[in-house]
Length: 248
Image (cartoon, rainbow, N blue to C red; front, side, top):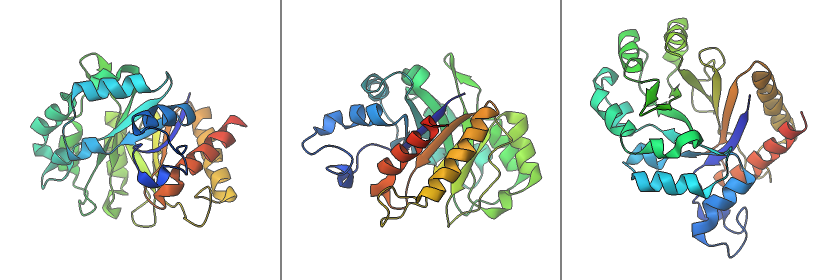
């Protein structure tokens, strides 16, 4: 099994001269990221529709073994009744993301922080998430941020659907059990500190390396992203974690 470690996106001005070498053309930033990390989470897909040509360009910029996780569209997830998101889910899947091919990672369906668990609504939403689209297998994960989702019934629904739950290492949101519902784990690590060069201290990085090592030993693929928090430290944190995993 594999561990894919990355950050959110690849365009962020404070990374220039800190992660990206000074003078590196912006058009080369994704390729550079692909040479040093193994994944990134695209947030632009949350806000708007992308072009098939864009997905193809991103695919060709990075090496084999690199993956793109995608944020599901807000038009799917930021609504009063998730059961009514069918057309929006179809539009999201039909925008050309299959151009990523083998480099397509999981889709993170991030729910509004105020969305509370309703068994019928969530069951109906999960039924809208297909296992494949145009011959490309899909992996889905739900980022539920309200504490009401820490419910055995929620986990049972996900397990039945083969859908993951996002583990958000965050001081702001509920930490849900991310290990038992799907054959992969999706983690968003959001506790980076600006006063630490690597964002996380050695003990925390060792902790996450140990957890990821255990998950991969169980046969799960891991997708872990350093995101939010002290964002300028995210690339260094990801590189530090990749280095630790290489030693396991």
